[in-house]
Image 1 (cartoon, rainbow, N blue to C red):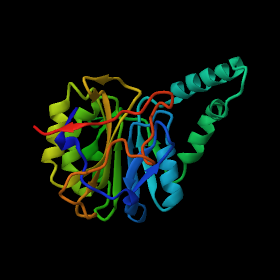
Image 2: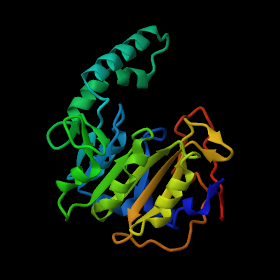
Image 3: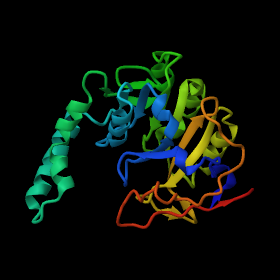
Image 4: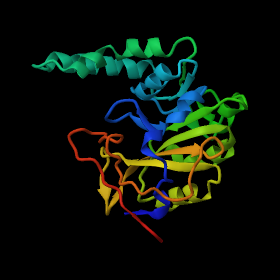
Length: 262
């Protein structure tokens, strides 16, 4: 079970929308954000920009700046070779496997013109290999409405203070927390002490195990309370939300979340 602080604020389902696939890589945002957002800062890219791509289809004037030091020329060489060999070995062709072979082309097409991928690690330093969230947001104009999306495989705990420093710039924060049981108190403190960003959605990522009722990985969406009408009362919905949430790994059952007061 999760502490009651992890239970989102009550937001009507009609105001929540899923962008990205109905499996891993899809995230929930407030529907009204589609009329507001001018930029998405993505920290952690890997081989998946489906969320960003779908958001831009609905909000074409938005731009994406992504940071991921692991997605470089070596990454794409190994990725393309691996997927091509897997395709040759498959007796029955699968659509997603065929698409993956051409993923690099899609990457080059998406990250062109307004959209940028910067090969740097998100951290505390600012140099040729690493950049801080504070530094990133120094170039963001005050009137911009920004989504900050973070999935950096456990390093998110190193930058939570930086996130608090830039919260006034944020319209949405989408963050994936890893190793949740070990960091439960840290996450709870972040949720409770954040005066501006309010939790509106939570989902357990079923790629990771559940330890004593606590998913090892949680996906959370926060919104800036100045930009949305957020009720003080906690959500009465059951999670995962039917028709909105889907298991990250299709062949496994989705994770039911329960909360307790403490």
